[in-house]
Image (tube, rainbow over all chains, first blue to last red; front, side, top):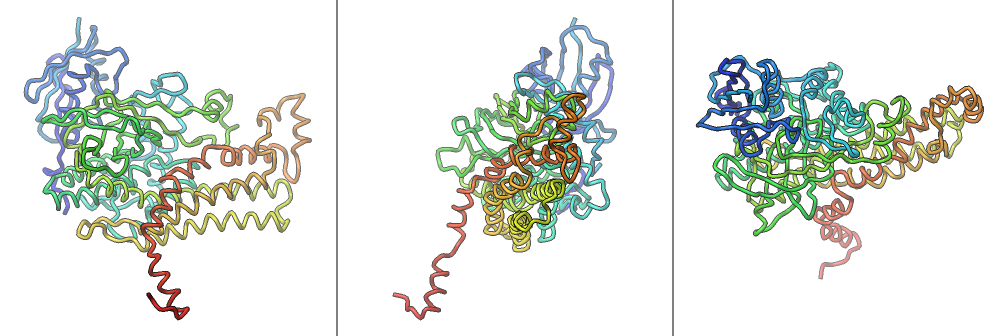
Length: 108
Length: 470
């Protein structure tokens, strides 16, 4: 009863920072809605719960727009999102077409 | 990647940021706090065992989902050999780290889930097993450290708060969770059998350990303080891996996507899920893990006897033989539980150990472990609990006094090192931990009552006596 790769139940999430594509991640299906719920309902990134990093998120279909507080460099934003996705057990990947999108911007 | 190395596990944990509280502080980095670090290092050593070709047979299985090699901690037992290697893994890991294999409970939880979700899908037409298999394939592909959570706080069982289109929101408390802080995910099972009307507590799911809403309040005790404040961890009984680290998991309205939910409301199956987890865990925890601990204690006790110079005295030898007897009897029960294992339920392809032998393994070691540590304390002598710091041997004034006081057939430093090791066991957390781990003995006695056919035994006796049935 071996599962075929398209039956693995994973999803690919593309991340862009300030409009620039910066990586894709693979997580178990449901990872994106879990990430979005964290950002919108809990106002926290996975791995950054109650550490003073309150985020604002807006979900449109399978696209999450995310604003992080304070002015941050692109490198800082990439590092935060990379850690956050790892903390929801999604890992960088190079194969597969993205079906979920996270757009990140820093505040002023 | 099917098998993570110890280094890859450590690298992944460096980036994990679960919300962890220990001894009055919030921990920002698990590897910087000496107590949480000991738990992570133990998990790392478990990953390391799978890298060693000498332990491949025990530590590496074959995924029934993909045919790929997988860490046995994420393997579903599909035959007797798998069960036997599973209990051997419990023995090996305990011998290696002298504390929990913190992936062990997760392993037994996932075997129970594989069995019970299959049965639910057959009976109810649900898709839990399909979901579970996808989650498991993902966990195997990324060799995730998965802990297991079964024990609820009685006043605040983990329960359903909201059912949404995309998942569920849960709230409540799981207590005494071994090694959850240093895992990637935790498998949450119901706390016990449930009845109609208790649907909101009937939950099984996988949760990532750093999701917002989830916090961990770690145990804190004299051993935590000793590790936190000592100058040199070499002073401690188990320098690298410590005692056994658990935490209370607090779910504060945590969202779980449906893809991670493996039971939601089906009270009828909670008892089966918990019982199947218990039968696996009693074989492994009782009949193998604690036997690995016993091997370490017996080794330390033999050294203590030799260092004092009493190893040839008959009553010392007798006590050491008794320690071996308690220990190996339990291991024999674990091997028997594996060998008499069977597919459960029929058609699922999942093998679970024999219930009676598994319970016998656990009940035997629950009592035997106290005897083992009693004898360790007896032979090790009062020094087991009265030794000064090892570092004090280097003090210019008191060092020579201590060397004179504690030198015997071996120098004082060796005797004191072994005394600290035995203190870790005889005056540590493992006595009570062994008693309650995999369920307190009253649970095993209850299972003995259920599983033993006393009428059949009476019939045998009557037949031999020539007594006729009324």
